[in-house]
Image (tube, rainbow, N blue to C red; front, side, top):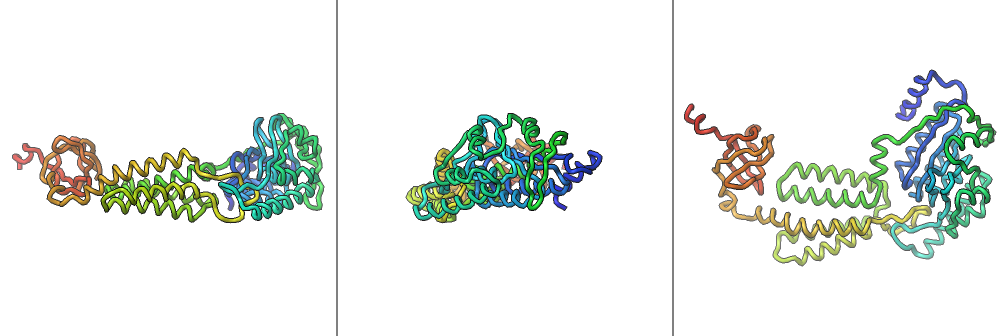
Length: 436
């Protein structure tokens, strides 16, 4: 059974049961970019409200826009809902921009808090300018869709089209005057007072809202949904991707499994985030090519490949979220922060050309030079379980216990040098050796 329905059913049992239609209103909160996670959250909330026969669903909305597919999933959920849906643009200072305009117009009842605004639904290319022909197609598609929604709900069709074609925008008071919304409500209690007695059409049925004595049931995003929603940000996805790749390469050359595990986790999170974003595979290929050239340069003299690799890396970063296709009609500009690109490029140049190059050169040192510490006695500065730090010949070294864990403070003997890490075994003290 759907987890949302389980939560709703539990709430019904704890409250002593819901026997009438007017006892519960489900409140959903949608803040930030409209993405697939947001869409599933809203659709699941609508399904739960229908399962418990709620009086209505109130969607508290504050968004700059979002993905066209996610927006349409939400709109379809609202249009096909068997419970009244109210969209409330809140709190003060919030907005229903781009995709938010479509969602607001699709609602059975729409309200806005004072000092909020709605509009600016003109199609925007993802990350840059779009071809004039493509722009015209996107505008016409969005205009037709928004006209249909406004007409269905009896709202200002002309303004709805202007929001798409001219990026028209209104304050809450102006939206009320022009018939774009139904109420201006100071808070949720004020909204409930104004909704009481309002009539809404659900298919062939007309229902009168009874919000005089209702119990509000808030359904926030679960922790996994919140995490996924936060990850669906171009800059965060980009940082996770690059740091994950850096960590894997560093782990390969330095022989550190912990770093490699961290890199794999970062890459998995990056792929989850990229799955919710309009990715340009060409940009991703350039990023990978840039990193590959830097790694190849570790094996040769000079820095020519590293310079070319850094250039490819920057170009790929700039193009990562600029797919060469018809833009989605209501998507806000998505791009990686220039500061993030600069920071990751600096890490690429500094980390790989200094740290990783040093590790690679250590790997290439002849075994006779690497083995100068073999046989030396040292002290475990940390517990080796099996990895830790030892003090040998006046320096701290990363070490691995070969046979069994070694406690902190124990004597150790170096038996092998593996890359930049020493492999050690426990060494009995002189007194223990005499006892033997």
